[in-house]
Image (cartoon, rainbow, N blue to C red; front, side):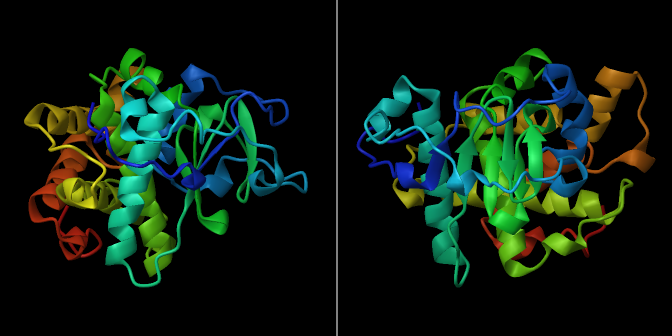
Length: 281
């Protein structure tokens, strides 16, 4: 467990829509996660992969109450959702002190499909960030797919990396770099946007203990994050799903790049070191 047992969890930063429905999810499934995760894992252009809204957003829908189940970090020892809440709290505690005028972003747990400010999305798109409603959306079943389908080792800090990457996109949205992320290719703007989010995830990891939510992070846990970054590299996913690698279609970066930029953020602890847009990739 990485969450401090005595940490007080703020469930208000998370909405739980699991079991609430959200319309009929079309397509998708675990196979769909593999197909599109290299495009959207971590908040690519969600508007290209979600359908039109039916006049309803998650903000107006019924949610489960996790406040009784997830009160302290001790609850994270037995509940995955409580552990994710702890990560969300820590990530936002760090960025709230780093970014002037930081706006809290809500993470929504869902199953099957959900209406968002970017449109209707299914679990097939994997975890994503929606800039219009400042929300992160995730079907927690993705973490099973990360290990069983994408070949990652998994583990709690692999989950932390995924969540922190999503919040990296939120930071980009707040500071105005999200719009830079169009265009595919190994050195394209989309890859640079995703690598910056990886770097921001590493920056948070560098400061996570200082937020008061996490216990000291071990090298094994850092290894879980780096292993997850490797598993979701464009080259790794293309090799597993297509049997060949085509850098011209990359949207998130290679395994090596994703690990490198997470490590840069972790080692420096400095958001200004994450300028992937001017770096030589």
